[in-house]
Length: 133
Image (cartoon, rainbow, N blue to C red):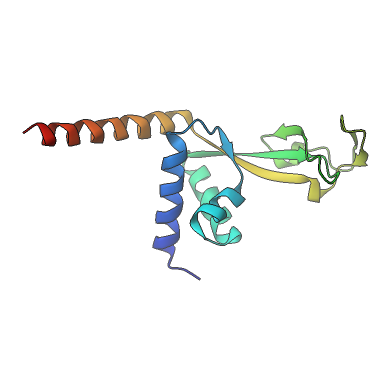
């Protein structure tokens, strides 16, 4: 297990890079792929960031048909997912929605995104001023 400060630093760096990118939402697995932090530690910290208002947590219901995985619905509250309900996907697959068909997805808060973008622009301008001296 990596030191907590290292985990947080790596994930914060990832979130800041996403904040200035066109990416709207991301899965916790994207964090693990970028940072090398294990999924449980990454998810726990992402939930902490959600509590601080930096991220918003949503839940996606996806088609379990191999090769499809279309998003059939997105919910702000996990309990709003219609578990046990029969779902029909455009791929033709009919199934009962199970826990394994629900996935967490995070969205960066708009105000946080704007803050990071302005912070980056300010740093860029400060660097430009240093070069002009």
